[in-house]
Every structure is written in structure tokens, then in C-alpha cells.
Image (cartoon, rainbow, N blue to C red; front, top):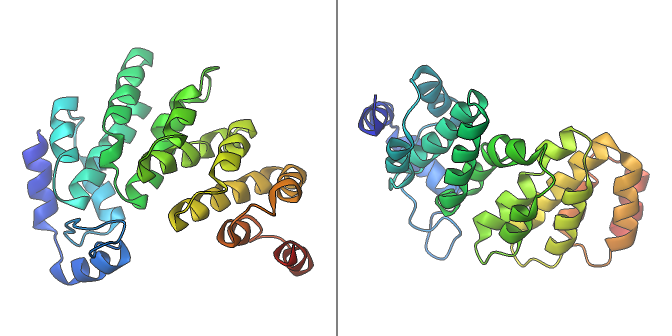
Length: 233
């Protein structure tokens, strides 16, 4: 099993008609955040299924997928890292974690980030005291590394660890890009699902600096009167 086999599998289920829609959906036009990306027109569950049915790949073969021009091939590469991380021993997990970080900029659209980083980067750091790598990513000049920084904390939130999410969210409140406004709001909403008081306290402290998109995402599950209160603020 190698990267060529996986690429052939992906090409065999390519859907040009679907690709036209996905090019618009993932904003691949000139000046957009996904400019120039090449879509095969394969839905994520089908890509997942190909990865799930395939044996593990060596990292050098995964790198070939991550270097591909095809969006779905890069997704498959990151999904292989996700799959293999779950079944790896500690030393192998560290190797996969480092490899993911080395190739983080190849996760160059929000879906590539969102479906993989929390189960590799977040999962690896869950029991670690040193999470400084997330703060380095948050300070990056690369949108996708910045998104990895905040979305990876989803794993912490699920385990009722909120400090890093809130600290990184605070750093991101003045970010210029709508994709970060949405990601930060999403993670704040997840915090609220676990502990409404903590979220409300954060919103009260930072609502003046918070983009409205972030605020809308964060309070999505609030009752109407609370939503009105925060949106008015």
C-alpha cells in the first residue's frame, strides 16, 4: 500500500459536477482564502471510508498525499495521521504529532484543520503540562496554523480543561479574518456547553472587543433573552 494507490482510489470516485460546487464552497477563487485549490468533488465521508479501509501508511507516503495538489488527497493524508495516532504507542504518537506540525500549513482549508487537529494535536497535548506549541501557532502569520491553535483545544474542552481555550480565544479577539471569528466562537460555545458560568464570565469581560460573528457563535444555544442582552452589548 502506498500513496499512489490512495490517489488512484480518490481519482476513481472523483465527481466533476460536485467539484464545481465545492470550489465555491471552499472559496477557491482569486483572492479568496482557498485560492487555487484543486477539488476532485469527493465528500468527506467517502474520503474517510477510503482511509478507514486502507492499511497504515509510512510517513513518507503520507507526505506525498500532503504534497498533492488535490484537496481530498491532503485530507486523506491528515486522516491517515489521525487514524494512525489513535493506534500508536507513545513514541509513535510523538512522531506523528511532530510530523503533523511540520506539515501544518498543508492543512490549508478549514475542513482539513477541523476534522484532524483536535484528534492529533489536541489529543497528544491533553496530558501534557507544556502546551506552548499552541501559543506559537496562535502567533503564526499563517491562518491555518492559527486555526489549529484554537480548534485543537476542543479536546481539552471535552475533558473540562478550559484555560488554554480562553487564553487563545482572548488573543484572537482582534483577528481580522472571519474564519477565525467563527472558530473562536465555536470553541467558546463548546466551553459553554460544559460550563455556562465560565462562558458568561468570559463574554462579560470581553464582549466589547469581540467580533459579532464570534459572539453569535458563542451564544448560539443561549435562550432568546440572553442572546438579546449580549448582542445589544
